[in-house]
Each structure stands twice: as C-alpha cells, then as structure tokens.
Length: 97
Image (tube, rainbow, N blue to C red; front, side):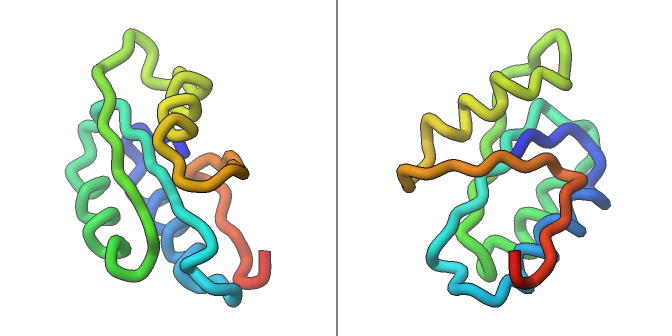
C-alpha cells in the first residue's frame, strides 16, 4: 500500500488487519513510503510488525508523492506470494474480509 504522511490512517488500516479472523500467516502487507514527513509512520510500523507480516519500504523521493502505481509496482516486486491485492491507507478492512 502506498503511504505518504497520514500516520493516523495507516494506524487504523494496520489495526484492521490485526483484527482479521483468518490466519495472519496467509498474507503479508507491504507499505511503500515516499519519504513521509510524519515520524509516526515508523511508529505505526513498529507497533504492528510483531503482530503482522508487514514490510516498510522507503523509496527515493519522487516529484509527486502521490505516484501510486510506481509505489504498488515496488511492493509487487518484493512480494512473497503469487496473488496481490492493492489497498490504500484509508481502506480499513472488517475482521472477516
């Protein structure tokens, strides 16, 4: 998922995934950060890194921090699984989705 600042949204998203009812070992989360200025992005990652399989990837600063496709492509390149589902940091899953 692309991420640029908005640690509050990221926290809610990670909280949603931590409440999932299916095994957490069946999915991974890849957060691609475009040099956020919000120091709480790293705090969110640190809070959930032991509860979820989550990777925080930093990329070089792009002229447009909202370059979503390039962020998603970076995540796909390091994904462990064959299937990828894209989400944004403001999409909070319910426990059974």
